Image (cartoon, rainbow, N blue to C red):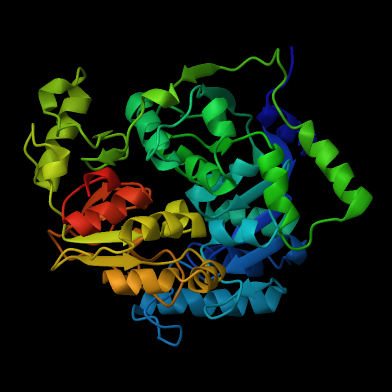
Length: 466
């Protein structure tokens, strides 16, 4: 029996097989941000331990960072303290850190690939569930807790029980106007928020092969919203072309040797998966969430469902609660839902490709009166590139608010970037939980083109509607 992509990467990193069924894995890279990491460093100091491989760890400030200006002080005292501790801890233990204002600063899942730190076949961890993003490169990447962060800092290893393997085959081509965001929303709507629980998901098929690296990162980013521990895509020519442009890549014969190894990182033809799902890409259209978890989503040309539309009692109860919180009536056309704000950004859709897609829709148009559209780049590098390409002028002429700083912003609502109670937003982030974007906020998850069209129309809309 052959091996899956995930099994190949896992097996290559086993330091020791434990007697209790747990493997000790070597970790190639650990990424850190300012939230959830102070506890790990405190425990490290209390135990008298050092960081074993500081060069295999990188920190960045992203969750609490102000976006209005680079010289603004973090308003929230707790967030300000987290950032200060991050700086002190990284300085004490010799860990490189990208602070707000640094050229390499940005959302942790965005800057890793930008800086050439993420490569096929690696094991990568971070104290953030959306580390799954980096599986787009054929890496085994997943989020961990504070105690595990400490363990990796001290030993460069992590104990884990092997996970099950799931494959999502996606034949066909995505229709015009349908994005990777719509693809993952359609998948989660089908299998549910626990559909991949206990599994590593591998995405493959014609539609996946056609995606850019940035779109693949979007797809893997939201894998965790289906309950999966990690999402992976086998590296191919698209991957190699992207990596060839990154800093620090080997050259000449060393590069060819790397690529030769990377080509071996794909599931064998006779590999057996524990679960298999097929989703025909050609049947999809733009999706939008209506409820309070990512599985509560429908096509944009659909309607708000009624609790009675669901078979299970738990699903019906969840729908009732969501409809009450979201203040929506069953049967309402999604295109009739008006919004107060639009957010474009996050580790899901804050890359240059996402900003370009929004700019293409906004060019020559204006944001609807009374609506606030906030655009926050995923990294300082993304912002510089947007300015170099003139996207900042497109946003300004459209009346959109293109922020100066990079970070998680309204996705996490840990700084001033948040909705007021009762406000409704179309957002390109990854979660629509109650209060996710501010207390009492109502979030509709959408793709960048739909976000931009919604900003112009003042209601949920696709670019074709304009």
